[in-house]
Every structure is written in structure tokens, then in C-alpha cells.
Amino acid sequence: MARRQAVLGIEDGAFFHGVRKVFAGVDFLLDDARTALVGENGIGKSTLLRCLTGELELNRGKIIRSRGLRVGYVPQEVPTELLNLTVRQVMERSLQKIEAAGEDWRIDVLLDEIGMTAETAEASFSTLSGGWRRLTLIASAARLEEPDILILDEPTNHLDLGAINLLERWLLDEFQLPMLVVSHDRAFLDRVSTRTLFLRSDGAHSFSAPFAAAREALLRRDAADASRRRVEEKEITRLEAVAARYHAWGVKNPAFHKRQKATETRIARLEAVKTKVHVARERRLEIADVGLEAKVVLRVSALDVTTPDETRKLLTVESLAIAAGDRVALLGPNGAGKSTLLTILARSYVPGAHYDPSAKIRFNPGARLAYFDQAMTDLPLASSLIDFLQSAPGVTERDAARQLAQAGFAFNRIREPIAVLSYGERARLLFLRLKLDSANLYVLDEPTSHLDIEGQEALESQLDEADAACIFVSHDRWFTRAVATRYLEIRRGRLVEVDSPEPFFEAQEA
Image (cartoon, rainbow, N blue to C red; front, top):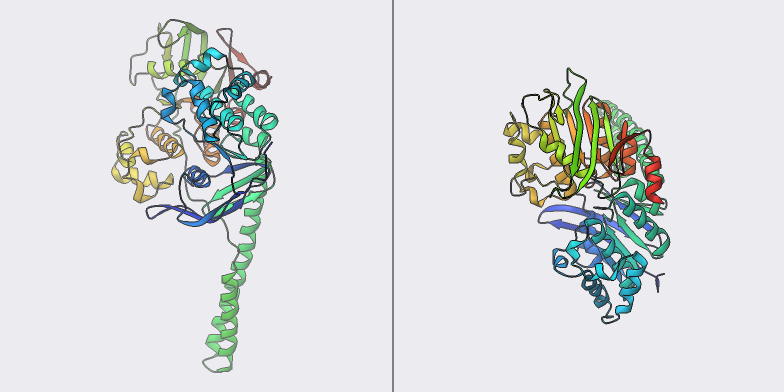
């Protein structure tokens, strides 16, 4: 429970990177709600959070905060300097922030609450899984730092479904304090939020409702604004025609000039108060849809999936066939071998290789595989956006520039290194490159981790409309329900086809 009234907000805030606007005209004041902050990739959500915490300074406007306000903040990426510390030392840093160093009993209580052993607490923080690093930082910020408000940037990144459910329970039941949460996980946002802020190019728009209801209200408002704008434009067009007639008549009768001026004044007033309509920038996310003459794209038989060091078997794939149009979701707890299986499939693909009917992994000779791994390790961060696209077969500089523009990348950024992009923009760029590779078999490992909600919906639509095959791993329940046509669950080291993901989701929640 917050110890005092938390006041944190922004008034007419603006931030620029050089001459490039990140956000402007942002106004809001947080209240006691669990507030979701939602916006497209690159709109400035993480930058805004860093301004609220004092890490960055606004170029215009001001941050509003109550005296002595304590903010618990967990950034999107784990600070690298923490990886050289033990888990306990990481937690001690949270105590130091509130000048409570030495009160180690608080750490012991927290370890017991989150189910972490004393031995694990003395181990290196780097030995924890990516999910448990995030959970540890979130629990430390919420409990040890005694914040008046908790700010979380993409808290579900690197979490499996069980960990996401655990985090949801923490936020709903354990951490009774105001929150500001940035996330693209729609199911997570809908469960934890009670208020939603949409960050757009024209500022922040607030709705006192959970994410799904708030987004529906925002879209209804957009539609109503567009309808009003059409009526206003129609009236302005009518008055312009009237003013033109008065002008023509005024040639013979100067008295009509007065009516003309009155009509033009009325037009100017209508123009000044025209309803503002949000126009989303064009940001296509497309995948290729290259057909196959044969129906089956991939066959797997008698395949043992082991850990990368080959010391332990994770699962056995006895028989699997994936046909054109199949969208297969891999379900299983963390560590069951889902991502490892996808990696093996991707590495087994050799373009143009001779078909071997005795192989354990057999691709249709016409298959063209595209692989998206959640870490996006194949992105050449030092390369420019346009050079990366030009490396695709047959793509000219003009083609690459046009494709980047259609995907929403500004022309003045296409020669910047990929490293300057946000993770969401990198994901969009990688999907654009996969499209240019003309794939018809997609192997996707956590494809929505960094995509904004519009990007997720575009990917869902593209996969639904394409005849391409797809096998994917995702902890995004919304995406899995929307996309998959088949479900394969890893049970006791075996791949089992199931009718629905819901029993698995319910088991993970329990």
C-alpha cells in the first residue's frame, strides 16, 4: 500500500532527439489506478518513462511530482552492470536507494515470498533465466524500494506463460500501489489495467477502463471524429461554392461583396474549429505468400531434441507433418525444448538442397524458410537499414527505400545503423526482410515480443490470409488464439497434438 498520495504526471511535455520529435503535447496525471501506457513502436513510450523518472529531461513542458515521491522503475532491458553481481547484491541495491542498506532481513522476507532459495540468492545474477531476472527486479522495486508508484517497461519480456501468470497475480493481489505499465501483451494488459493511456503523435489520450474496453472506446471516438469531420468538410465545400457565386455576382452588384466576406469569415471560423482526426502513419507489416505445388511443406520423424550441449534429451518428435496453410502453435512449459526445436528446424534448412527421404527433417524442395528468433541475433546492428534490405536477392536501392517508406521508416533514417532502432522497429525491419526473401514456411520464435499492438494485429491478419505454413512459439495468449489452426503440446518429452490451447493455459495459470 502506498504510504502517501502519489502525484506524478507531465504537462505539455515534449522531447526531441536532435531535430526529430519523439513526442510532443503530452499531458496526463497518474492516479491510484493500474495504468497501461500503449502506443506504436517508436512513438516514445520508453523515453517518456525515463523523463518521468528523471533520467532524461524534457525539451519543453514539465514533470509534475509530489515532494519526496518514490518511484520504483524497472526498464525494458536488464542493466548490464547487474550481471556481475549476485542476486542478493542486486536486491541490496534496491535497499540502498531508500537508505536502508544493512536491513538484510527484508531481502530474506522477499526471497521467501517469491520462492527463491538462499543458495540461488548467493549465485550470480547472470545465472538466472531472463524471466527470473525480470521478476527479481520487479519484486525488488515493488517491495524493497517501498515506492509510491511502480513503473514497468515491457515487464513480460522474456517471461514464459507461467511467469506471466505469476506476475499478473503479483500486480493484482500483492503489490497494492499505483502503477504505470508499458506492454504490448494484450491479454496481460487487459487483466492488470484499470486505466489506459494511448500515446499518439498528437499527445496522450486517457480512458478510465482496462485495455480492451479502452481501445474499443478510442476506436469509436476516432470513427465519430472522422464522421464529424466529413460533415464539416461538406459544409465548408458548400459555403465555398456560395462565396464563389457571391464573388461572381459582385461584378455587377457590389452589394454581394459584403455577403461574400461574411461567408468567407464563416468558412474561416469553421476551418479553425474543425474536428481533429487521428491519421495513423502508414506502417505496413507484410509477409510473403509464395505458394507450393505440393501440400506438405515439412515432415519430421524420429527426431530427438537435446540441449545445445547435447547432454540431455528434451523431447522426441515421433512424427510431424506441416502442410501449406497450417499455423502450428508449440505449447509447453519453460525449458521443455520449444525454442530449441525451432532452432533445429531452421538450421536444418539448406536452400536448394537435394531431397533426402531418409532424413529425420525433410523439407519440400519448393520450401523457402524464414526464421524469426526472439533475440533477433541475425540483425547486423552496424549496417544501415537500406543496406540490410538491399542484401536481399534482387532488391535495388530504390526498391529498399520504397519498402522502408511503406513500413513507416522516415527517409532521413534509412541510412542510420540498425542499432539506433527500438526493439519494436527492429522487429518490423526483420519482418520486412523476411518478406523480401519470399518465404512460404515461417518458423517464428516469440514473434510478438517487441511488436506494438497494431503490428501484432497486422501479423495476425497476414498469417491468416496467407497460404504459407507456419510453426511458432509464443507466450502471447491473444496471438496464439488468433493465429493457430493446430496445437502441439510437449508432454513428458513427447509432442502431442491437442484440440485447444485452453487446458494448457489454465494449467499454467494454476
